[in-house]
Figure 1 (tube, rainbow, N blue to C red):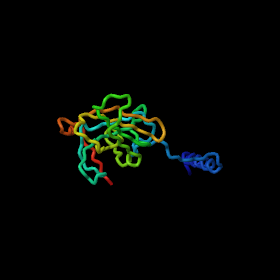
Figure 2 (spheres, one colour; figure 1 turned 90 degrees about the vertical axis):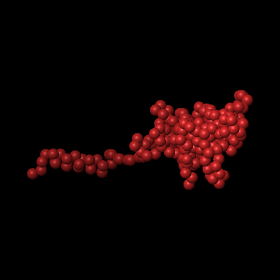
Figure 3 (cartoon, one colour; figure 1 turned 120 degrees about the vertical axis):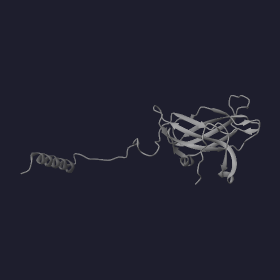
Length: 195
C-alpha cells in the first residue's frame, strides 16, 4: 500500500508535467550580466575614478621595443574604480599617461614632455589581480630623459569606448638628484613578462 506522502508527491509531479506540456509555463536560462562574487575575472562597467600608484623614482629595465636595451622608465599600477563601493573594473577603452616636467613655466595648458598610449588589447596583457583588486601593471620607458629634469608629474587619462573620460590625480616625484637618477624605494617594480 502506497503511503500518503508518495501519493501527494506523485500528484504534484503529474501536475508539474501537465503544466509544462500544456505550454502554460516556459523556463529560459540567460547568462547574467553581472558576475558571481567568486568568479575569477574582472567586471566591466562604468568607471567613476582612476587611481594610479607609481614607484617614487626611475626604474631601469630591459625595453622590448629597443631589443632589450636597459632603459630608464616609470613603474606603476593603475586601477579603474566603479561608483559607490569602488569595485575594481577592467578597461573598456584605452589609457593614456602623460609626463610633465615640473620645471616648465606655468601655463594655462601645460605641454606633456612624453605621452604613452595603451590600447585595450595591450591592457588585457598586463591586467592582474592583487589584494586591492584588478589593476594594470605598467612600465613606461622614458625616451625623452634629460639630465636637467629634477621632478616630473604623471597623469593617467582613461578614454572609454563609451562614456565619460576621466583623469587620475597628478602625482609628482623626484627623478634626478645631482645628476643621479633617483631609484624607487616605496614600491616594488612591476616586471611584465613579454609573450
